[in-house]
Image 1: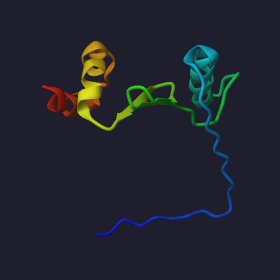
Image 2: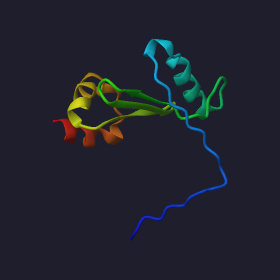
Image 3: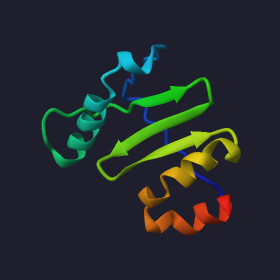
Length: 102
């Protein structure tokens, strides 16, 4: 069975990218706004914000108050992060991650 993709041409999306130092971004406020959005609290943001570390090719995306995603081109880049923050992993995905890094 094939994948069906639905395209909605009635909405406009604005995408902005900029390069800056981490210290110049109020990332704590962005994380707080992302978490608050799902819960209906203020201040909140409905925007999707991706942090891209060009030095080590890692992308960080906090999707809501429950968690985040971390992307990389290769497993070796993510393994030290997996080991350091292993206790943060949700049990639902634990077997998958353990299979990748053990």
